[in-house]
Image 1: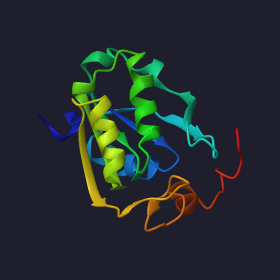
Image 2: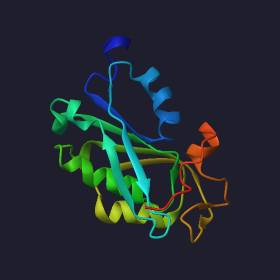
Image 3: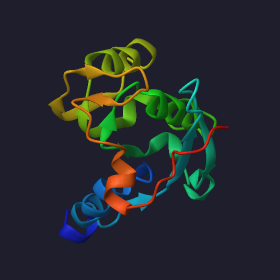
Image 4: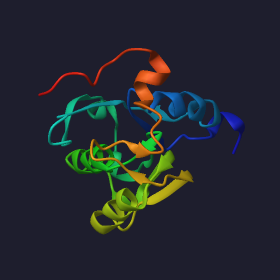
Length: 157
């Protein structure tokens, strides 16, 4: 397999906005991979996520694709769980999923493996825990806000 073939049967799914910070680098390592973004929002009172939009329809034969979900912060795991649930509607398979996160906490990891035991997870750093508002401890702010300088999470739906 040549360097240009790397990622030929793969899909990179960044959870926007923060997931782009990881997927942009991953596409350099997997140049043939498709990229299908998903935009997630959450209600600030309930912390429940919902899908604003996605690009999954563009992926041909999703059941055979190796999937890399990128999201730097795995706190409540709500966004990743909602993404996995949403992906099933298009035919993606749990056994082909690799979740890549920078920071996470034990409770979020446990939620993922309880509902999706076949996925794989790569985590760089284990956080101390999670705050009542759903952010990791120690608190570093909203990852997307910090990366892009735009306050997106100041509204309630």
